[in-house]
Length: 229
Length: 229
Image (cartoon, rainbow over all chains, first blue to last red; front, side, top):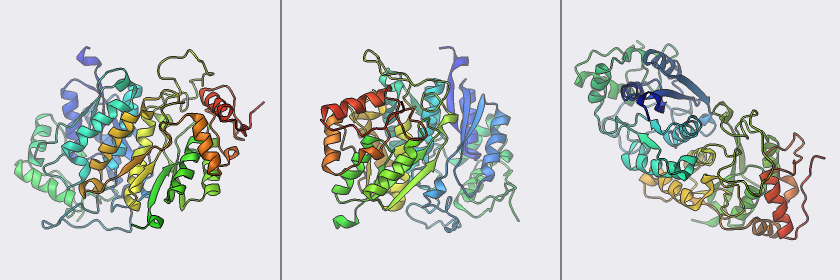
């Protein structure tokens, strides 16, 4: 297969990590189909950010799926009754910002779209180093998902192999930012904050803001994030 | 744990199989949380059927999630430009009624709800005997899904075990119907047809109608299906 005809579905949330993943997939020669979700998230500003990122980096299509996970709730990101906590270095266990089965749901819809497109590659920006401790960001999980995905689909039945690609999984946040800078990602377009306001301005206090700030510091890159004062 | 406090999420589509599964889960002492999907399916009559079934058998809650799989397409069930074929004994391969990754998507949202509820059991009416040849109905797939699900969630991290229960997987359609009759399932409430009309009347010609008709015959049970003339 010619590189110019390789299709991939990329989960693009509007955050720093998935923007970097999209740039990496482009560098690898994939025709990129970006997929985002309007899932009832508190930080809806990331939806507009995702579209900006897809436009800036260039995708064949950017699709947004409506899916109301807030009717299930169980997370500070989908239930306004649960507050987003400030970063706490001593916090243990899985934080309340964990959205039950979110990556599994997103990957599954990506899997369906990949099958329709004839794409054999799905990219997701999970990271197991500088991350919030979510179970569905671990390498064992991704590996099990890939095995399942190949049994779930025509591709599996026909012996073709579908790959879940996680180019960030072993990188620190600083290394992710360095990759993105090399590839020309404009991080000012991205929104990572769990409770960004409508203008896309970050709180500067949540886990996600903390990891992002520390990442820019460690990468010696000026932080382009806009903060709500 | 007392049997009376066991919670389970049951995928209830409105068809014959999932109605039987719901009755079986009730018999096993589960408090049942029914989950259905308004996913852009051609046979929307099954949504009303699902609610009738849940009411008749008794559930704690019946939740319907809006999820537009028709924006992905790729199936006669979600793309009106693709016709539902008549049953063909010589048909080979995966039929056009296959919805890419549908069971994976449905199970994943069920997984999220189960986690929020604290349910450790998810029931799905897949069947690998009298079925349409979909890859995501095979035992290997279900087993791989369960492995993945336990890595995806808090339950997995905390060492609790989540089970994907498929009580129909090895049964013929006739055996499924016999189980349902024993448990008092009213199959006149159910809609199996891939292109049922708004009144819930079946075409009598598609794969799903054929398998259902043959099942009632083989079970020596009078077929309560209402057909469009």
